[in-house]
Amino acid sequence: MKKWVPILVLLVAGYLAWSGSRSGDPPGTLEPRGTADADRSYDSESSRSGEVAAAFAQKKSDVQVEGQGIVLRTLADDNEGSRHQRFILRFETGQTVLVAHNIDLAPRIPDLEKGDAVSFCGEYEWSDQGGVVHWTHRDPAGRHPGGWLKHEGQTYQ
Image (cartoon, rainbow, N blue to C red):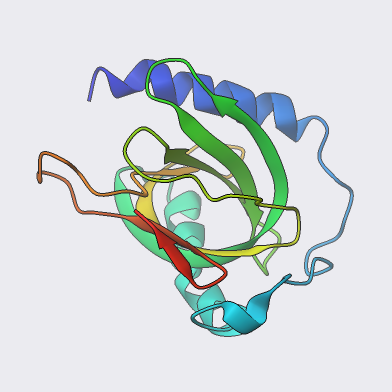
């Protein structure tokens, strides 16, 4: 876990930097783009995204979660240490979460854009800005539950 601390610190710092320039869109104003290909509808996933809301409210970390959100913003890749594709998801409730997808262990989502629907399974880490979801890939050592991202009918793990 100690080797992940610097990575998480960088991810949270990037998220905090982003939060100062957040869009003023009120909750629920983003409509999913390309949801016809999504495995489940946005509304049915909002209850699963409640796992993230509960972990956030309880300030819990190291929690395996699933859910779906709408891409609010794509961020530059984090290329320090393990490379991560980063983006902000917004849930129907208005809560946001940073997704940090390890692209050294799993394929990146190509052409990800604001408004895209993305389903996820990964590990949640609390922060006062909404938190981070990482481990959205298989564990090559087999010691951690595998995660994934789904976008436009494709699974990335």
